[in-house]
Amino acid sequence: MNLARTIDHTLLKPDATRADIERLCGEAVAFQFFSVCVNGSRVALARAVLADGGPKVAAVTGFPLGAMDPAAKAAETALAVKAGADEIDTVLNVGWLLDGDHAGVLRDLRGVVAAADGRPVKVILETGLLTDDLKRTACRLAVDAGAAFVKTSTGFAGSGATIDDVRLMKSTVGDACRVKASGGIRDRATALAMLDAGASRLGTSSGAAIVRGDEACGTY
Image (cartoon, rainbow, N blue to C red; front, side, top):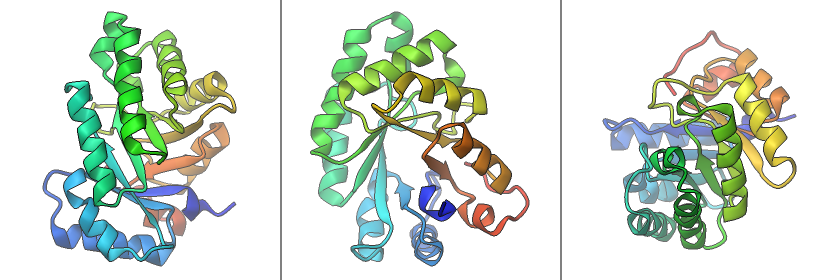
């Protein structure tokens, strides 16, 4: 297994500068990570820095709350695609899920998948806010919407990925969808444990340390 190729090298802090994004892209090339994951306003920059055929560019939409109008989320997705995004990581509307508004959640996610225009969509569940039953429901809705991945966390809601959540998500989606673990993955042992539990992609700001086997560091 090529550990580096499972990593979405991530920088989503609000104070990330142009130099920070350029550094992120340089590290992605050096370590041959699968992608960089950035906010929408940085997609064009990342696309310009990364050569075609190198690491891909993933953009977050509806980030970090997922609570905006579905039309706005879809429009943000379309703009990210226009700017050069290869993949979309979008946040599920947790409030609607808690309301039991499954039709609303599904409509919201289908709008993003349509706007992504064939590009893989990863649906962020924010697992730390959900019961196990709701995690399973969210996974099924993501699959029904046509998502390519279900993803654990934004990293901004006070809790991140857990082994138990990755296993639960993988057991729910089976082969219909893949699992991305994100939030709190800062060392090689944790990364490998997430992959062993069923994740096929990792979101982390600590990719270089993970590949090198350094001690835990990073924030996402």
